[in-house]
Amino acid sequence: MPIYFDELEKIILKWIKINQLRKPTKEASSWVVYKHLMQSSKQDMIKNIIKVFESITIEDVKLNISNSVKKDDYINIKSSIKRSLL
Image (tube, rainbow, N blue to C red; front, top):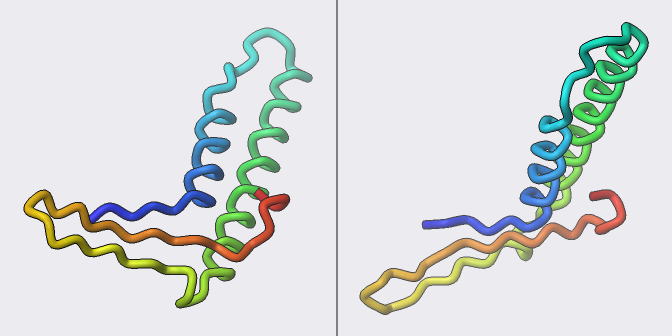
């Protein structure tokens, strides 16, 4: 049964985008900036993931069960966290 969690998906897509940045190869200062950028952005994203999970209430979880042969069942999770944090 698939789980749809839009807020978490947005954070993961940002994580992937940041990890696709190319590593600097020539300048030592650019390597230091790159390492700091990666470290701080990953820490921010982990904090956002924790906030999203903490903000979930039982009312935010919707279970959709269908009686069809295809079994189109899924779980939809909506977090009550503000979109500006994501």
